[in-house]
Image (cartoon, rainbow, N blue to C red; front, side):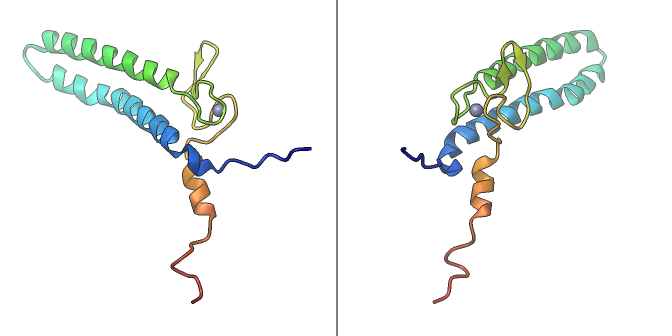
Length: 119
Ligand SMILES: [Zn+2]
């Protein structure tokens, strides 16, 4: 029987960085709603501003969600946050349970090399 060597999660780093970036953009867009709406309402011409802010925000939200939906898991190749029609922005892949910080955790699990090595 052939033995499979486990893939080091550090090799997933570029793809996991992309997933983390898209998650960050999604949360920034979601959290920007309240301050943007407060700014829009704090004006004599609030009706125009609220319309512009809400329209812009909903377009940005749709774009951020679409980009978060279509990002692929580096381990299984499936959509990281999407299972069927359901979008769930969890921190693990919905198909293979790869954690979004698997590359960082792998690096932390290794003992420090040069700094504490005996000479
Ligand atoms: Zn996966």
